[in-house]
Amino acid sequence: RLLINDLRSAISLQQLELFYQPIIDFDSGAISKAEALIRWHHPERGLVSPDDFISMTEETGLILEIGDWVFATAIQQAANWQAQGHHIQVSINTSPVQFRSDECDLQPWLAKLKAINLNGAAVNIEITEGGLMEAGRAVTDKLLAFKNAGIEVSLDDFGTGYSSLSYLKRFHIDYLKIDQSFVRNLQPDSNDHALCEAIIVMAHKLDMKVIAEGVETEQQRDLLISAGCNYGQGFLFSEALPATEFALLLDKQE
Ligand code: G
Ligand code: G
Ligand code: NA
Image (cartoon, rainbow, N blue to C red; front, side):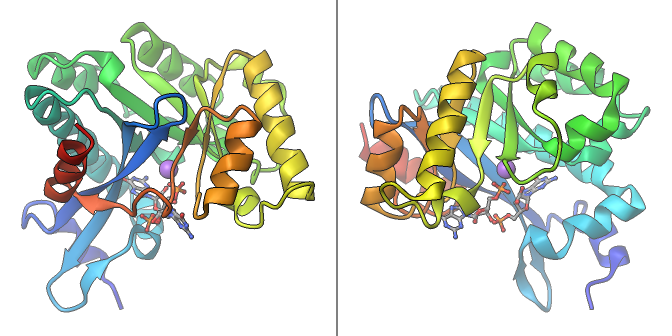
């Protein structure tokens, strides 16, 4: 069993690592963004996936500390890539708990950006429907603070929640990420095809761009491009990679 106490010391013991999965701009075909995906190098269990430990950190509040580490690490990585001439936006996952908490003040994050002299436009914050729905007032303020800092915001796992669409207009969101469950069985003229097309049309009407997740085949990619989807992410392009391997991918596309 994974123990929360092991996880508490994981940051100081440097057992956490961010992997990066490329997000492809369908207009240019080039890597445009990198989604940071956390991994835990457990001394006995090896590489542990976030599905096996994030919920535990949400229950204990440890997610606030881990979230700060993720943000600091990801923006530093974006700055490093910039220094190497790669202008890649880093996309950072967040937990609803981070938005709910009154203690979660964004000022330290914005100060960190400033301290490393990174433009907010190099950062994208991924928030889930749950994060938007539960947080109410606090999240409105935070989304506004991101916008004022030039940081973009993506709504993750779109289509899997049970919330009304009204919040899409109410909150400032730059990207919808179509959940992999809609892409997995994407065939011409299927229900999922109709849903993807409808989501893309709606997003564009509301001035949002669309990122499709879980793109595994060329057929899925081509259907999404025909439907006007702006970006794609998935095993067709690459799985999530350690930062050094991601950099090799960037060098290769030069
Ligand atoms: O990379 P993988 O498919 O194992 O990720 C599983 C899930 O864990 C994803 O849905 C992702 O949203 C979540 N996740 C990955 N990294 C982070 C992170 O840094 N913070 C939070 N809150 N969730 C993450
Ligand atoms: O919830 P979120 O979108 O953050 O989840 C990202 C997760 O999806 C990661 O765990 C990542 O490993 C996984 N993933 C990324 N691309 C693909 C893909 O093409 N197919 C499948 N099955 N999973 C993927
Ligand atoms: Na995500």
